[in-house]
Image (cartoon, rainbow, N blue to C red; front, side):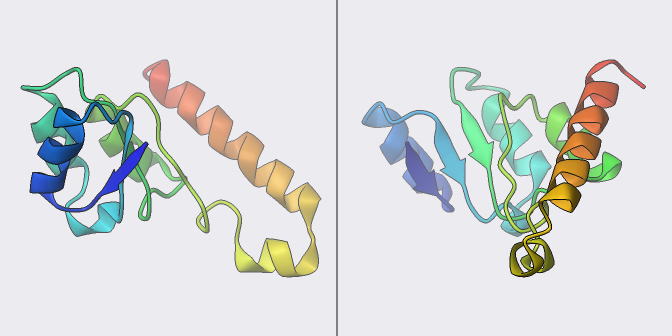
Length: 108
């Protein structure tokens, strides 16, 4: 997998057959940028990282971009969870996130 944050690097990675591509940080351009790339080039598989948060508005925007998957780090596994080793809170947050994904996929 390749990682990119500049459009020309996407073309270089595609030419070298590197898929899927990590798009990091997504906060630079957002879901509209990814949707604009995937539209004319649907074979491209992009995994956004560094700006995906587990809330309805953010997830809905990414799902509209027709992604195959998304990556989350500190928005899901917070410093507080790690510091306190609060695995029950991590499990609760993960389940809430998975439920939200299912709701969005089902159009609710």
